[in-house]
Amino acid sequence: MNMYDQRQFARALTQSAPETPCHLFSGKARDVEQRFEIYRNNVRAARISALRQVYPVLDRLLGERYFTAVAAAFVSSQPPTSAVLHCYGDGLGEFLMSFPAVAQMPWLRDIADLERARLKAFHAANQIPFKPIPDDSALSWLEQPLAWHPSLALLRSTSPLLRIWQSQIDQLPMPRAEDWQPENVLVWRPQWQLHTERISSLQADLLAPFRSGSTLSQVLAFSSEDDAEAIPALAELVAWGCLCPA
Image 1 (spheres, helix red, strand yellow):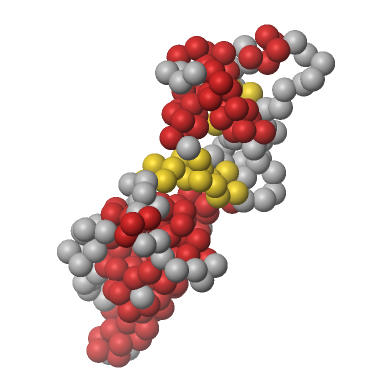
Image 2: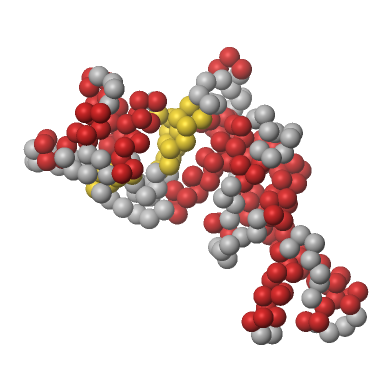
């Protein structure tokens, strides 16, 4: 099978309603179509299974049948662009919001984004986090440009995102309506252990400038909060290994 035939074969496997490339096979057209449908179903099932492994909490929240229906629609409209299936599924949370039955539950999209962030953090590049050296002067490390660790992801949610996620991981009750408060969630992997933590709005605001390589002194200078609150909040982020030398 030459390269052109291979492309035809692959395209027929992934399109939602393609013509079977019968000319690539021997036998009667009807028999070829039946055999080829087995390939197509296997490909579809493998991609749905890959999404289910990436989004286990979303799977539990939606239920197996509804998740399968959403995943099947996603697979049909957005085939993978890489042969590495753990890379597949970006945008599933936003895609989910197009379904009327869940459109008024944006926290489901946030759960999908959190699970995706954890997967990306797990596979992110290793980099040594910034740690102030005690022998250096405070001025030297306050002026060190810093950036987010390659694994870092910050999610700002209008829902109790971390508590919803933990309720499914640890088999705990879902947050009640009176406890439904916004949460900022941080995901990162400074060494070999994946971390998922709730952070304050202040810490989320302090993290933002480091995307562009700010220094600790610059962030503190432009913070609207008093140093008595900003310094401990920032120190915790540094201690967690969220930042790296830029």
